[in-house]
Image (tube, rainbow, N blue to C red; front, top):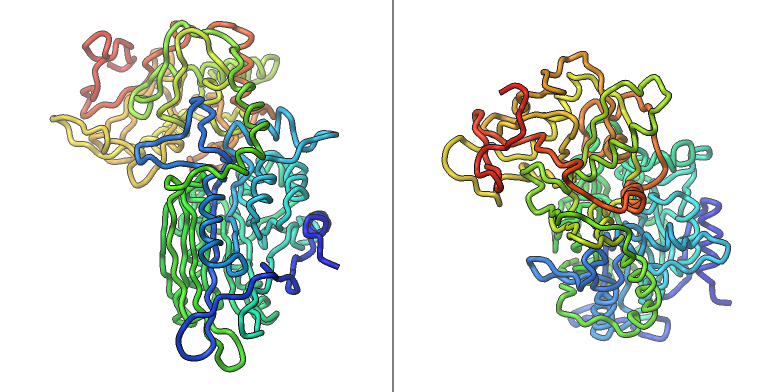
Length: 614
């Protein structure tokens, strides 16, 4: 009797057992692809995606239009499906596999809708659109990403049940038993023309940062050891089980760095370390870093063999192809060569079957995000937010600070000044003048972060701001400023630059990082080291995301389970009107040796805000 993978994987997800489908055959009706030359040779292809983040269609739910960027990339599984069909037609269905490296069910309003508005965990909950699409396309296995845990373990378990393929995570362990909480690996056989099948194993590794970023969901329930340690445990086991080819699907970048510093003993971006330190791996599908790496070769320190790594660009913008050439030697299949490349989804049309399959879900979400919830007196834009204090970021901070103040009423912390941090998550975010919909508000805050309140001293606040100010490239005084080269120093992303409201300060970008914050004041007086403030902060930052100093260890005095995005939506519904005159201020500016870098576009002079220390 054929194995029902959906039922099998569902049972596995609940027990922490291991998926070892060594007896299954991909494309049983198809014969393998022989390669010319002496001896028995066989070639096959493994396709890979990563960081899909809820993208099925080439659509931006925050703008209400087709997705587009400066490079004219396209997104979504509907386009990936067309590329997959083409590769399978070219190479033969039985000579291909399709895997993913995680971060699947969070990121768009489509994925949010089926997690929060009409959740798949409901009594008659629907099938998640990502499960429906990936099942239809025919995925064979997928590693878990850190964002899989954002909506809690019950929803993740339900999603796993709905998938016709296993979700893998060798380093996600049950906290009580230390056994795998999900399937560590998946194995299959590919038929060849010679009667000797090729056994392929896929090991899944997720990100240790889950223990920090999603501790509210996983604390006391799961632990997340390092990728290198778990790969070293499982790769020899897979080889002993007869695997001719071992792939790793790792939700972990290649840089060897960690955004959470030394808070965890395990490296966040460890894919290259796994390749270098663990023998027996042929290729690694890389995820998490949202980078495009067509092919990256790393020499293993113990064997001297090269391991091929590839990371396709996020959201379904690219499809990785690993091409394997094998030769039959000494009674077994040996990997002779591996190459990798990426295909661009912008050359493909959307698969009509996927569009038809999920058209109803798409229309539901479009209606939801198009709901009018209030009006705005002025148009607010985020295009200048990375280098100017703009009203649209002040708006986020205003709502956060008001929410925290209300939460502190009646507590011993009610009398402390409340500050707030916010980042520019999207430079294209806009709140229009006139009617404001859920779409526009959600576009301000695309992440599913929740709100917390932590107590910082004046000295800690200064250190926090200094760390944030590393975002700017050191720029000598005098002369013009090239905006394209001003921000994102050392690869710092926009979401790791925080603007803090409630105090005033200057950032002197002519100075070296660590000595840039000047004239830090609260209510017209310099901030002293032993002053105490409450900081309204998102849970990602409060949990150590970005490795900002002090905040992760600071006392937590309030928290909420509601997403910040929904808090802002509720605020607009209640107030009815967004009026920047009620909250917009020029609380921070960039300077060079005390001279403002920019001048007010309205006043044609330095910012009108009277900085207290001038």
